[in-house]
Amino acid sequence: MIDTMIGAVFKGQGRLVLEARPVPRIRGPHDVLLAVKGVGICGTDLHILEVPPRHPASVDVIMGHEFCGEVVEVGSEVTNCRPGDPVAVDQNAGCGHCMECRRGYPNACETVFSAPVPGFANTPGIFWDGALARYIVVPDYMLYKVPATIPWRHLAITETLACAINALRKANPRAGETAVVLGAGPVGLLLIALLKHSGTRVIVTEVSPQRGAVARKIGADLVVDPMATDPKDAVWSATGGKGADITIEAVGPLFDQCVALTRFGGRVVLFGHDELARPQVPPAAIVRKELQIVGVFLAQYTFVPAIALLEQGVLPMDDVVSHVMPLDRVLEAHRMMRAGQALKIVIDPSN
Image (cartoon, rainbow, N blue to C red; front, side, top):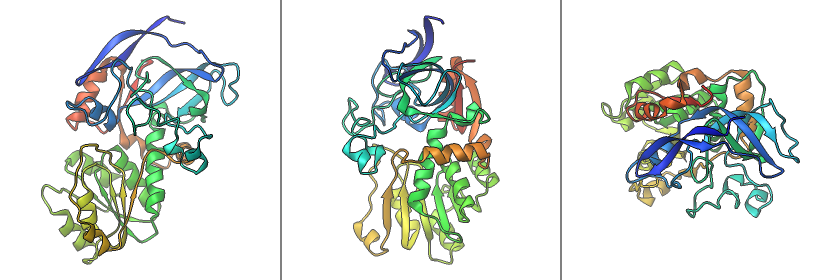
């Protein structure tokens, strides 16, 4: 096997650089060496590369935290996969032993939240070397062996789908209800598809005409451009002046809009993660409507259903994954996503 590889390395102050790195090696009995087959570029990656950053990261790490791969080599005590297996990766998998895991919250695992920055997950591609390179070593408990029939470009964003399923469970949609999804980015689009499968009418707010068109294609009943139409007017008109049963925030700073759009007794699900957002929401606005407010963070026992849905092929994954690009075009891919010229880009480091 080769001794060096090219990785996309975070250098701080918005800089991402392609440079040669040693190929990682197995060091422990539960280590697994993967040949990376797909890496999703995430909004978190874009936040890390902003100046000032909207998400912390360690300087000089290889980026890439949404990924899948093929097993190349396993440690002496690995039993859940073997060389040649295709695998999905839960990059924030709980240890299963700490008190938070035992309480049923692997997404608050004490091992996961041992990052250099308190309050953040110790995720590969953010605080230690990730997958924007040809190879990566990860512990076996992060891996799910999957059917070989699932395309790599879909498998690369299994974690994104697992997080969306976590949000769907929190929203608890019921047939005939109306849901509003704020934002038709990759997560928003997955949520639209999941909500439609639940028998829910879906209204979407989205400023991008291209994303709005994709939202319509995959089943949104109404798409509202908030720059042209007041979302509250549109939602009130569509619901007979009552508001939405469910509002899901998939952007980051729009909590106040969620409260305004949701009917009495409705559910507000906060998915978008923006560390700099400071919305002004009077508590009385929540009290008067008896709103249920819930946050969604990472996946929570949702990888198995995510993989099942990918295997069944029932979700519009090729509408969500708009581009597959080689590693040497990763800087171009970031520019495209910032400019709104792509939805979800998957990088193929093996190409």
